[in-house]
Length: 172
Ligand code: IMP
Ligand code: MG
Picture 1 (tube, rainbow, N blue to C red):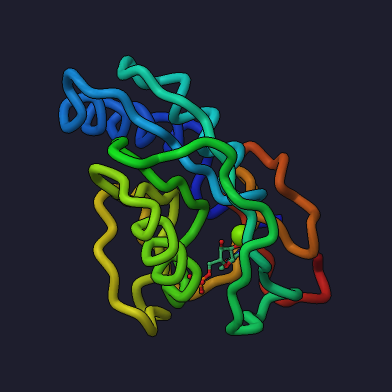
Picture 2 (picture 1 turned 90 degrees about the horizontal axis):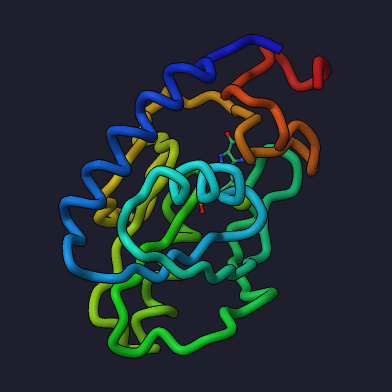
């Protein structure tokens, strides 16, 4: 596995992101909604660095098969508690085409939160099909399929402490 972003770079960036989020949400409480399962490692590591009061919620949507998107988004598991009137921050591992987040933002907005923002560890801007506002981006990367820090290839490699990639799919 090749290393694209090592652990210390990720940790440094998470410290910066947490500081920025604390500043933006001063005096407020945040409901973090993690998109299962890819966001879990990023969500935990980011949340540990926040001084703001947070609650955890999780939502699960239908996902990729292998390295290609099916293009369809479905809710597999919904959030448990109401977010009406709350300040909500969606936590995602990576924004690729933007399809998942565009759908989820519209879906969660129907639940009438006070505010709804997005924090993602990674973004692949060159792949974007749906334009959407993303308030917090850890790293912008080129069009490469990456794994680790929560991201998977067919459910594997989520536990790698860095963002890695292989030159060709046979190496997975
Ligand atoms: P989007 O709907 O195209 O923005 O895709 C977002 C989802 O695709 C993410 O939540 C990931 O699960 C998955 N995904 C996109 N690119 C990668 C990648 O490079 N590695 C692992 N998963 C990816
Ligand atoms: Mg995912």
